[in-house]
Length: 400
Ligand SMILES: Cc1cc2nc3c(=O)[nH]c(=O)nc-3n(C[C@H](O)[C@H](O)[C@H](O)COP(=O)(O)OP(=O)(O)OC[C@H]3O[C@@H](n4cnc5c(N)ncnc54)[C@H](O)[C@@H]3O)c2cc1C
Image 1 (cartoon, rainbow, N blue to C red):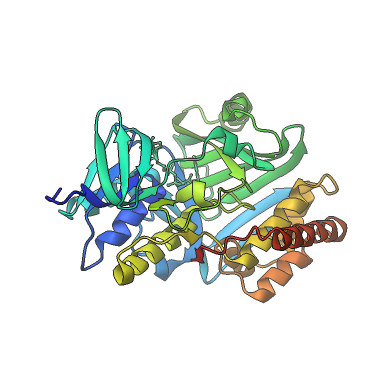
Image 2 (cartoon, rainbow, N blue to C red):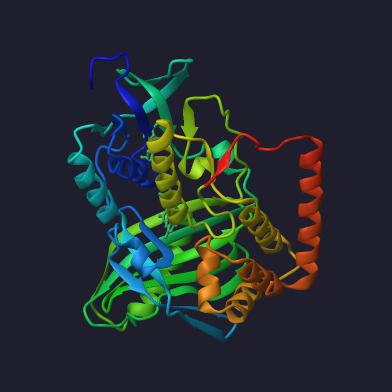
């Protein structure tokens, strides 16, 4: 790539959601940087499903395969359905996103991608960063590191969203295509708060996941036999049904983030930089916003900035919500179903998509049970004062 001492202007480590989104956003710039993406996987598979809330019109540039204007919750015999005129719950299959991004990037002669390339080590100097893989090394002005967090960092989370899912195809139509069940049969169990997630992709195809919000970390495979039993029970009357794909995750909710060094040419991104919403485990939308902001910044200043993944208000709301959820003083299943009942579809969608207005935040607070909320608010205030006193502020990051 070129004859300068740099192999690329920007090396992106990891061609997942954050890495590919950034490369795609940068590829729309008139003055294109030279980008090198290093991805450890030999090839992409349909390894996950990304869903998120958005206004239909705003998301045309993404390979969305389905959108719903309704979604439902159920717990302890109570059912709540949200219907929204303005907001949709969108679905992207990972294979479509990988294919879409790669096709766009292939058109860009300034962008190269090496698959099957594991980055082992980074060496930063004042001129740039040396990226060391098994048998090669590359030098770039800046490196964007989207590798997932190490286990030691993951375990700093107070709560884990752990799920195991299966894409089920039936020979006859059985799914109500109009309404995804986001939290079905919310239940307080020994594994934590558990619920079923059902995404009706077609009338005879759905992604069904068993999810736990657990204070203890455990392997998602633990949920597999329970899910299998549930699927057998549900689908045994339909003779022909099969599982075409499985997916699983451990999402650390509220994981501690390392403080970035603003002078470094290594930019942390993705889950490692707080893209995962602590209260929900959703990250895709934040990653899109981050990638767009990075490209805008690059257009003006020719550098990728260190950006914070959320505003102070969003962090406070997430932290309060997580504290109330993690407290043993309330039934988590009641907390979610009451909240779903008390806020309307638009308020819920705005809250989940980082678009909450001050009134939305008040409505969410109002929907939380009073005693654990007050306790969480006091504890949040105490930590804020401690941070001010110890001057432990991220003053060097800009917010996106
Ligand atoms: C199964 C699943 C379902 C999810 N569903 C949703 C959802 O519906 N909505 C939502 O908002 N969020 C969802 N998430 C959470 C979040 O959006 C995803 O985890 C998202 O992929 C995070 O993006 P990322 O770029 O940080 O990480 P990744 O997409 O995991 O990308 C990291 C990349 O780095 C590569 N890599 C790792 N180590 C190295 C190395 N040493 N050298 C080179 N490359 C390396 C990996 O192979 C990977 O491609 C889901 C997560 C999972 C796991």
